Image (cartoon, rainbow, N blue to C red; front, side, top):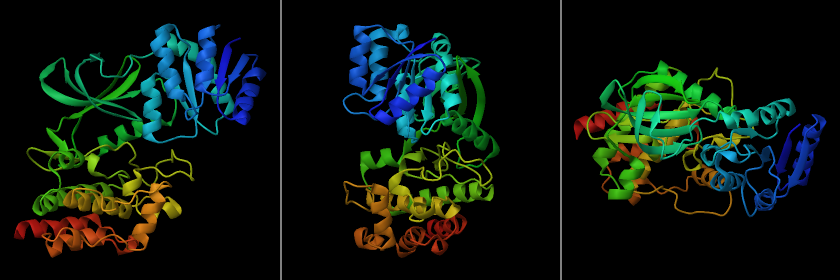
Length: 405
């Protein structure tokens, strides 16, 4: 029998989880938020396992997990996060805080019980914590952390037998049994099937210390996001070249029935030499792939979602084309074309703005933009997906513009 602490600001959810665990013979105590739980734990006795909601008042689930790690280290109870949130940022926060599993509500009772009963063993054999202090993983010496997300962390690293070649090492948590791991494995499968100059090359895959990982070609350069923050708007010819490269890469992916689903300035790398690179295929999928998202949920980044996604949630090559158009408009202007921010749902506000054609014409805000480039961007952000050009057609138009400049 285990002593399980259930932490949730919903009376209904606390009682539901308690009932499931009590039926298995476990002792259960409940707490209405992370602050109340942490205070109770410090007063003793400690539970064997904590099942916590993520979003709660006063102290959230990931904050509770981090406080327990800071105070008790490895002697603290393992934490299972149970949440409705399924976005990369939320999952990433929880995993970075040290939770052993991330489970999506509504949950399967048998699955949750299995995770709870296995959690003490998982904690004792916990994988190395993924953070900036990680210095080694399997055959790789880690030099620095480059970024993090819901499905893992990207490090700059070198392999022992190739010390002169730096790679981008993306690491996922193999012991986390939620959909984040399934998405990580899908991303790995997709990358292994693609080969294009606009994609960083997949070099190596493996598992070590409780984590799955893959090594990619390390691209020397910055993202569009980073470039805009440093120098402001990009000149039109550079935007045209970047657009040509990304459109051609997306056209290749679409020909292989892969939809990226998260095209945005932060996922477009501007190398010092060679073609622009499209990165982060963590949300990419093929039409026949089993869905990892509830029908009511929309994945991607709100500011780059095509209007039709708010209606039926179905990603197509046309939705990638829309996101590319917004990305190029932002690169040309130096900021997102929709500047109004509302207190409500950003995605729905953007949907209304684009559907009503309330976005300023490109040449109105960037007068020196050539007509041909403005036409490509405008056509890519057409509200109706059937009115947008394919990425292949956009690449051809941008190539012609670059060649004639």
